[in-house]
Amino acid sequence: MSVLPDIEPASAPCPATPQLLTVIDARPRDLGGFSVGRVLPSAARKLIGPFIFFDHMGPAAFPPGRGIDVRPHPHIGLATVTYLFEGEIVHRDSLGSHQPIRPGDVNWMTAGRGIAHSERTGPELRQTGSRLDGLQLWVALPLRHEETDPQFHHHPSRDLPALEVAGTRVRLLAGSAFGETSPVRTFSPLFYADAAMPAGSELPVPDDHEERAAYVVNGSIECGNERAERGRMLVFTPGAPATLRAVSDARVALIGGAPIDGERHIFWNFVSSSQARIEQAKLDWRDGRFPKVPGDEREFIPLPD
Image (cartoon, rainbow, N blue to C red; front, side, top):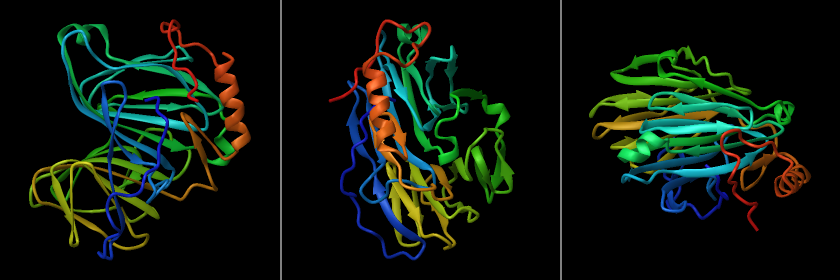
């Protein structure tokens, strides 16, 4: 999604539970008639491992004739990771990729030195009306890969590890956790998993990554004496064992990884260790030096003021 990340005060205090470092509540944002819940970056945490951006898209219902239209826009220095629970988005980018993403699939787009892309509701669903619910995350690239060549990879759900952990169905979307490794190529140690927890089940949070968090997509969970419902992220204390308990049937996204190698600046859709590099990207987009998106050349999102 093309957005100007905003950082507001955390909406929940730092809990006393030893397993938890802090909690972050999603802030609602209207992207032109389409609502998202913004979790990262926040005042409480800018990153969790290399994850520098976390948006919950929807859930939203579009009547016939409507849908999402995120016009072509640029990225540098990051990878976008799109995962849906419901609905469909058609991805196009300046490499010539044209890929619908559906529930359970992973779209991983590495921006590197620069890419442009668009995200829209396809014509068939636009005619019938549709629903949409999903997550979009950005992963900050390590220093040695910030200017790598742009790439796009689509991973259908059947190719992603599916396992059961203490009665919880887990799909490993990226990285390594629970003794499994996803085929999605990453550039630094991380994990990203989708966990469907039945009421009363308990799920240990993977402890092989220093920074870890759990976001409640729906339902209700507890960790120690902290309760979390839809739209809340629990950030865990490094090195402390943590266990989630489902108060009701719940769906939880687990993320984490090694701390990123140095400070990152973020402006609009650009992430970089260099403020000068971001300024150059701003000029490149303003002056039309990013490549066009084949099949979606007629529109674009202007550089924000």
